[in-house]
Image (cartoon, rainbow, N blue to C red; front, side, top):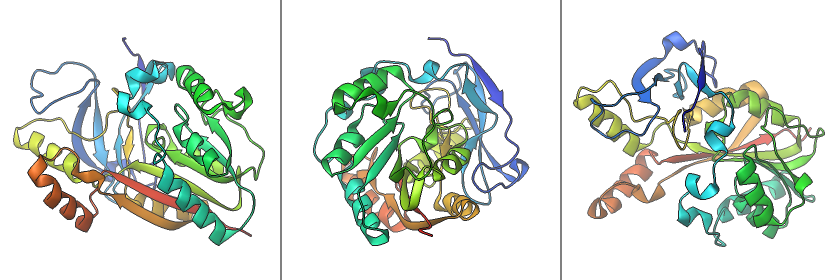
Length: 306
């Protein structure tokens, strides 16, 4: 399906505020998937840049679809793999366990959770099993219907809107999760600032994002440059999974200090050295762990209890 975009010029880094003209150009990204041979690709491109100050990778200009449905109003089985659509008890288990541990350390009380961009509701299902009273936001009608069916929640528990249009009373939630969604938001810093008011004093925010330090992506990027390509492997702003940003811990250190939040834990994930041939997975996993160049970064932020 043909997608129509407007393009927003970015003047400063979304996370740290450093001027865009201080950022480094990494290359161009097409509105379609690409391999190592990019010489015959045709389509729309945008420039991908890396902030020299905090390491955020972002598209400039930022491609914004005419309607969010252009990206996400598709059947869940076309967006996610068949394996992802199957639920198992380990899904989101360590995240829920860590949330309970961190909340007990900060303030013992009943737990109310908000899952932003809840998809088909797998995280909500796990959080409910762990004793949370759950709510969600999901702007894709097809994803939301699947989530309601999957979780058994009432329709009023999962709002069918974007985070920009959502509204909750102040101090509503103990735990707010941006699981695999922060990188999809056009302006994630503003979204985080918005949800702080919904979070109770002493509450925590979980953010799980693509790492701008991922070793595999770096190798792919350098391979393109060695071929003389003007393209880059970073991001996918105009094709699935529609990632607009990759983040570093410095990105969150800069933003959290401006918003009055505290980073209480952080973790880079090895992800089993994905995309390496079998014999290289072990050594690659060790290298990724030592250098903290895994595919994902998880950050836990706390709101002051005062």
